Length: 463
Image (cartoon, rainbow, N blue to C red):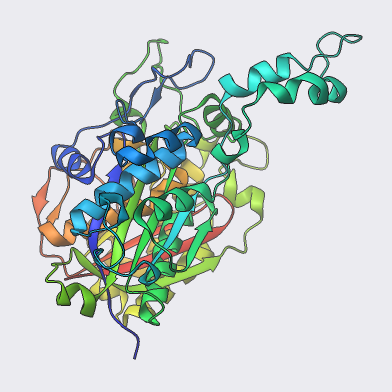
């Protein structure tokens, strides 16, 4: 028999604050953390808003002896480290981060694993630009010269430059700080990364390879490159009204599952959970937020262009012109959800709430909504949908960990957070504006498709 897995710690860094407590209070209040960008000049982009964690710095949370290592942390790594520190504190774990020696930690180092989702980290433009500027061809002004790059350009980069931008460095720093020496992995599959990582960490606990693991993901899209990629993909919303005036309330812009939504707003954030064996968590007297009872994953069959950017029609018309019902359901997501339900030993009728991706981009949202309707049929209209993108933005690889954190908090508190929605939505989807409210919740589904076609779903049960 496989061991049961519970969530004992939740750590989140997002535009709503530097910890899970800030996220939950912001969701209850119905407050959006999308604000005007201050970290770089966003004038040339369609959006001037982002969900960034203002004031958060890893140096403020890492152990004193580890502060020098922050110099080689890209923002993505800092977010993961901060969320992991928050999760460890919430779980009441003693790790090497506290200075504890072997034998003094809650678990032996080889009984703690990690699986953390990451994005393909964008290089800091301020670091790369001087190197490129030194590589301009003398004989062809404005042209890049590989010879000049080798002679002068590359020398403008610090020796440890690359270590800031390797995706596996999120898990690397988290495991070093906390002394986790069990199985470790990094998943780089966009928005599905976090949920897939939670599934993998749960599996290594179920089969007895470890007793405890870090799980989730983090990513920062609030960079010039992150904005550019999202805009070129046709996903970045315009944050100006019909008269050209800027809209500073991001909650009015991002409208999940609205066929006329102008697009999404990017954010930065991470959600890291501490998952443990139920038996060892009980042995140390720890109460759980929720139990992970089901996990499913699947790959989409749809062509990459249709699924990723795919909100566009064949004639090239803009994403917002796609009506719900014109796009086929995301079959990979349907399969992932059904596998998660089967793994949990329940049917669609048992789910009390759903925490989906709800990106705010018409095409992907249409496919996600239709996938939910294919699984839940007529009952879907009566299942509350918890949407978080209007509050924190598109977190990409950080999405899944935050979705799972919200689902676990809903179960723990027996509460549905407030919901923002300033547009239209199909009548068969419960996503209208709503205040925070008490709810009887036994099972919550968290699910997310990804830009590259991966899909993941987990089922959480009340502890």
